[in-house]
Length: 468
Image 1: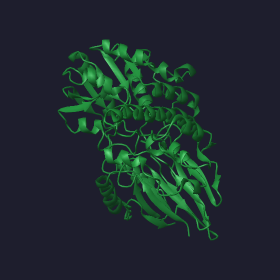
Image 2: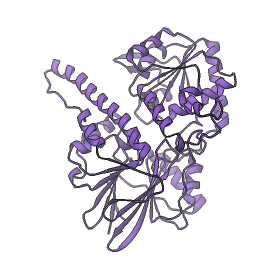
Image 3: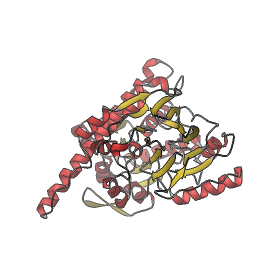
Image 4: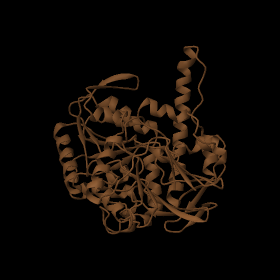
């Protein structure tokens, strides 16, 4: 019978990867994500895959975030030649995100090798290159929500809107083996139903096996409108204090939401700052892609500037938004000692331009740092949220004197009650496995599922293999 292997995002949040195998030798990989956060987790990105990439028939991708897609170029570099199935919007976002990732891999290796040369150590190769990524992009095959397609012999897949980011999908895989069909449903990352731009996650009611994310399995998010009010209060306080506001943000999903909310406050006359900088080339590119696929967004009549076609262009939502695509443009922001809102990558503060803004602002007591999303264990963002007095960045130690705020209602992930509601729509009690979450959060969700639904959820171990 068909087998399912748990290879990534098991008792942790990043590195999503699951392998489906049939007795006829068909192998389909669900996601191929990069591990992010702790040094040992990131080091595992260089390890050999626990399967031969040459033997895979296909990859099915839930969405474009790097922790779900980031090792695809490495997979291709090591011999995978099959199709990579994803929604049309995800296919477009992959080009933006993975070419940027390849650039980072090459620059990181170049920087590391300068130090290694001085120490007489052999050079290292980048995890993958732009050439690897360009080859990988040629293997994309765009699919449409709700339309079944054959991913590989005996494996029919249907994508359903997950409501997480543009193009995100719940993966329904119907696997034929020994003349018997079994349905696997992989939630991918389920969206927060309060998202201002995305539709609520689709509900399904039939499955034999479910893989469900559990990023926020231990709690619900703060009330959405209360979070908007909290953001407005923070901006007012920062204006009174005379400092800048830093917002580390994921380029895809979170940034577009933040621009929407800031646009709302601007239209209401509640945004005291006179300049908002979007300092992320990837986010600027993502804005353009969101505009291309605006028919997939839930924004009819909800734009801050009113329900006309021009206001659907994201930059039009916030007239004082200034984009800084080049490094030279980015450096001009340093002239602002107060009165600016700076949205920059990366979302967990592990790299990108936000580090340079930390260097210029984090040690200032009048500065306000707004953390609008989940910070994985081992990331710089998590270190700051946990109360570190100093942090090391850009080869120097910086004091953390800025006021740090975590906003609990803007997450792009479903909270505990939303997860329970989503899974409760399944008519029977399929085998349920919790993935994509830290262990203690999974254990809380496991207990609540048992108490509320009488449903015994499983928490797999890395490398576990089950029969479908």
